Length: 172
Image (cartoon, rainbow, N blue to C red; front, side, top):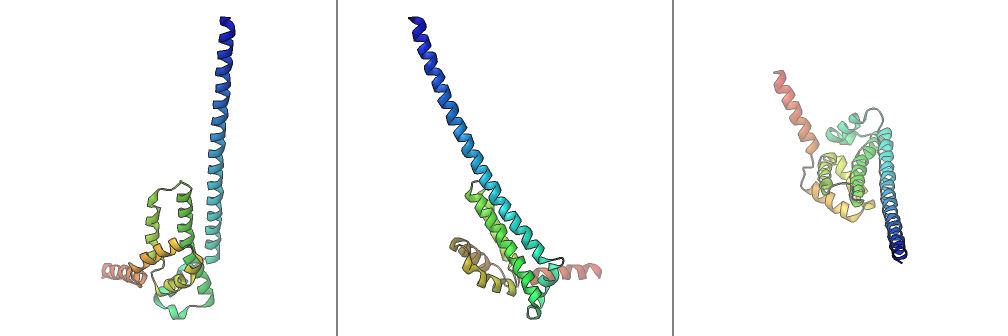
């Protein structure tokens, strides 16, 4: 009789072990699914960023310099390049926000939004934002609007001019 009771307890223990093992496998599958989803989402954003870079071409700095110093001299080609340049910054922020939503980025990702004050820190950038924000989520629009309200409209020009003053002072 003692052997029969021991056998029942061993069978019960084995069944508990199987159930616990199945639960652990289910948790692992859920984790792997979550990681795979995050990887695919990240890959999507990275592919989008690569496309933006390719569409900017070999010399986006020339178009950007025009947007800072001579915005009335922009060509259609400059407009296309700058659209991709400005959109690149937004895709970066959206990627970080999505990774945060998936639990893979710390909450300090929002500090990156402050960068958009520089990224859109000229007349052309502000015009791009005024037009483009209509297609973005309201919470992102509100945050970027607040960031831009706290940054200078001519931030890029002021920064570049300061660099040039430093260079001029060094030459003299």
